[in-house]
Length: 88
Image 1 (cartoon, helix red, strand yellow):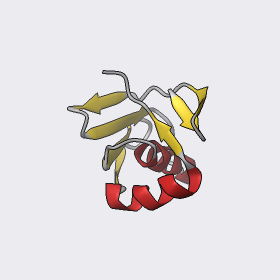
Image 2 (tube, helix red, strand yellow):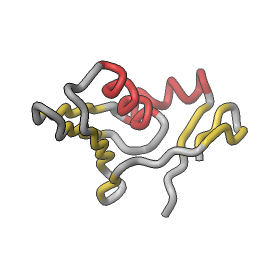
Image 3 (cartoon, one colour):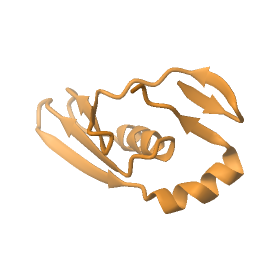
């Protein structure tokens, strides 16, 4: 579930979560666009997970690695009070 200011505002389903340490997003598009990278960063921002991988298996195989350290999330959480809760 996705929470904003303590209220549930939506659902979130990662393509894959590995050992609750890496979020993997899979795409099959012509090329990776910035919006896909921002989406992954937002997933990282809303969880305790720091590493995300974005794979594209479209026309051209591509990948991106994103890191969002938990230390930076603390100041954001205080400002925006939002989080994503991953199922067990």
